[in-house]
Image (tube, rainbow, N blue to C red; front, side):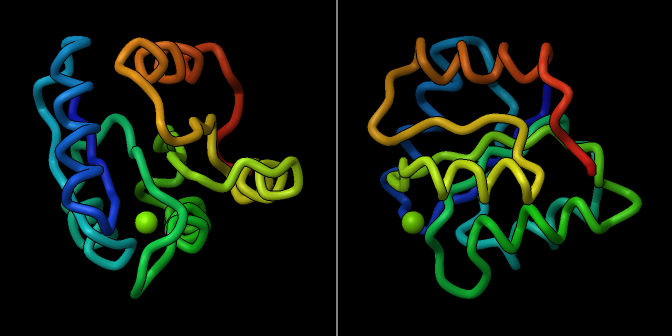
Length: 126
Ligand SMILES: [Mg+2]
């Protein structure tokens, strides 16, 4: 499973990458904002997008909307990783098309659970 993880914090990207490795996901690329992520996603081949919400250039919410608007990648499963945990924000994220979300900080087991839940969720393009 090829994963793209997007976060403006290099530390956070390293943490997520390490946690993914702990639970068996070895093929992980990184991007530091939504714009860079769209460039990588355009090449295709990704099975899951894990994105932060607050980022410069293009934030996670705009990234989600752009993915869902793109014919080539609109069905890509998306997990949003964020410190924004309000009910309203979560509804906004779900409406934009995220399949699941996880609130920082989290451990590898939680990340694994959130990824596993996506398989059983409709979510995605709408
Ligand atoms: Mg951020």
